[in-house]
Image (tube, each protein chain N blue to C red):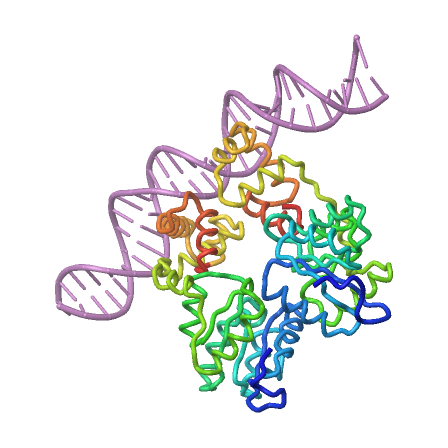
Length: 211
Length: 211
DNA sequence: TTCAGCGGATGACAATTGTCACTGAAAAGT
DNA sequence: ACTTTTCAGTGACAATTGTCATCCGCTGAA
């Protein structure tokens, strides 16, 4: 498959992977190990573990899921950049959400891949990123710049809780606001998102990655 | 392309995998191919493809995700059993939902694995199932029998749409019912599930796998 | 210093939602 | 033939939700 590279490390790319689903984590590692020029040197099942592993091993590339316990992949990426670690980051996620991509790029990620891309593209992306290139789905990239998150922090908080099924009153006590205020924020969010009610608004925000 | 018999020896377990996320599909295949005694003879990215592949290749074991386009993994499993195909089925999913497990067993599945189990357990489960054993998380199994889905078909339909953010009126026209009737069903579902409103009810139903 | 802007709150009003009791018309038992 | 069930609908009422106009206190810039 890759004749130019001998499997004895002429230039082996050293990789750390983070993914909370053990089955997928192991499988991705297996997928990359098949490639002669890539070596998985550590695995993590949450963001904190991941940060520790990356800072310790200083891999060439760090591949991470977004939604994980303890610490998000995006938070982990940001933390790693903050520590001035030269490791390049690839976000690997299920969600084609503009908001996620934007936050990923803000956090200094070099790649943003979707889990429903072809499996072969992962190894290719690792090599590309290692060479210093960026790997982002062009279609998604376009969308990311077009539509910025219109919600304020409060609106986001309120909408998140409303989407879980909380009543206005519950949300109010939960956030230390008055019930009327909560309804105002909700109303504002609903109109900003062009929704008909809080549930639809929450759904829209979720699919855009604004949560 | 179609070697009539095993080129490898004694007893290779022949497997077909179905999973809609290409990256995960390829990775799982790689994971299993590492094992000397397991061979992935076909892959599918949705339920229909999967059924076709299984009926054509008659593998020993069929591993499938649940939530896929075109046709659900559960539906695929049921269809395969209906066709009197001897292939044993393993459901591999993210969701530890009693309702899913119950439907899986009703569909004649031999195994129900969660994606957040350890990666090594997959190959082991394939072997176990191939030997005619069942592989189901004991804790989940207990829960599955304890609490049967209390919802009627109508309540399910109505709740599903309500969870998407539709108003009672929309749901009514959508299902050809009157608005009052919709509210009655919703009210009934809410009380059955011990929820405070439609949103919470939908959330509860979803997490139990009753959707 | 003053004034615009923002976060938060009120109050009022209409629309939607949740609850209940009750009716009627089909199945489905017995 | 005579109950029961089940499914759908009605009407009425209370609670919750969505919308608006308006108000207050604070902060930051002109």
